[in-house]
Amino acid sequence: MGWQTVRFDARTVRFDRPGMALTLNGVAQGYITDRIADQLATQGFGDVLVDIGEVAARGHRGDGAAWQAGIAAPDGQLVGRVTPGNRALATSAPMGTLMPDGLSTALCLVDDTTADRAVARFEGARIEAVA
Image (cartoon, rainbow, N blue to C red; front, side):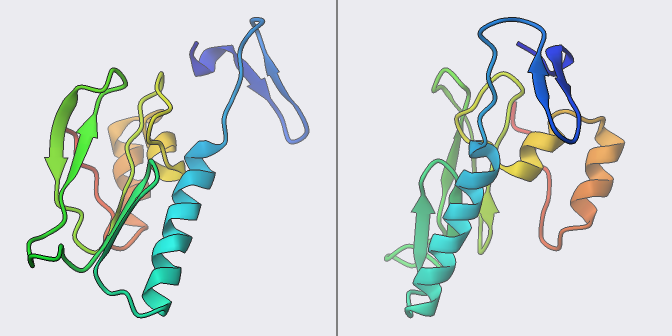
């Protein structure tokens, strides 16, 4: 429905049209994925791929190959593949809620220069546009 119809301040969120809603999965889903991957690492699992809508990869597949993750459009069509390495992967679209994370969700709402500056503050993070 677009961010232009959302009004908020420090205490309230309001919508200009009935039927609008926000989800917090953009933050919670990525945080939970990271915590699960961290917990598995502390238990001695060095090669894991955690996928609960967000993806966190550590190590390699059982055959020694790198983990691969597909990126799908909101309609489910595969639009790209990436090799996350020892990192997490999040995707976002302003009108979709399938795999957003806090940073990627915020980045889809700003210009390229602002996005580049924000990502530069996170070691190992990068923007990969596939669509």
